[in-house]
Length: 425
Image (cartoon, rainbow, N blue to C red; front, side, top):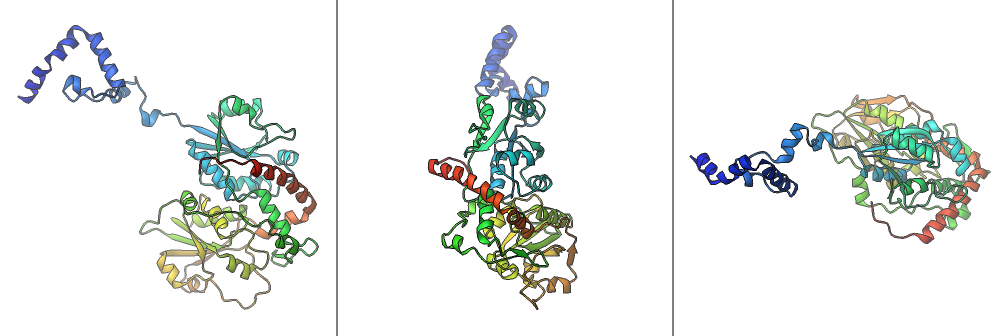
């Protein structure tokens, strides 16, 4: 009865459909484009037109047919730090898929000076970031016409991304000029308080060159550079915020019956060795919890000048790793029963390659409790690289890195002098 009455009350519409189909079709199309309900015209609960047309193949379905935006960001990513990670996080937010170009060793030497890390090590670090989908190794430093065509046509890149700090070629021209001219360039905000130049400067200023040596474990031994310390040189300017930690966090806890794997350490100067051991640890369970030791603990157990990066800097670097689910910021040295219960830890692991302070003797075993519980496992470290071995590369090529830093310091000084507020996060 209701259907019949409803039909009769809208009989003028049906007559219009019969006698003026083209006119009525135009009205329906206009209504759909204006977002009006088609049921107003039919009164019979006809499906909304865009959905109907998508089924007929006239309009593509939004979920399956939407083009995925691919963005490209390149860099040297030498001495990978949380500033690099945050840049790539911002870049990923501008699209659906992030492709990272890793500048070749030769191009770095020609444009910036000697790299600290090899291509293989830099590739492991960049590939290990949670926001990276693809990596193009040996990318050029300059976005040339030829390479830009390759990006657009072969790699299907929609936009090229870079920070708000200038990237200049040796002749003083903008490395991204062509991308900007093509209208395919987007800018992100530079992460303040850290740079590879800054980290190299910390290492150069913390240790006296003539007195630097390595102990039998490969740890740095040396006296602080008093002149640099007195001037407050190369002190971290990073201002940690809760927002930044949230941005880097997965925001998820382990499932009730998940196998939680725990690994701890300093994770100073986050390097390829860290990425590989974290990858190995993650494969042993469902959830990887990483304990980051405090600056005081690292200094006590590794000696001066460790740590080079402070607690919050180290925590963000670890959080950015795709194999890490959660971190404890300021984890205790000893793994206690209470810790194991609180975090429902199923397995505690430690790598075979680790640094220690040779002056400390008779230390208590930090893994005594998990060993007694039968939940401790020693993992074979995939790489022999350590924080000290990375620092030693810089010290061994001291003059070259001093020259490189002096050049970069001038450009950074100019950037900060001309710096303006840039929105973004």
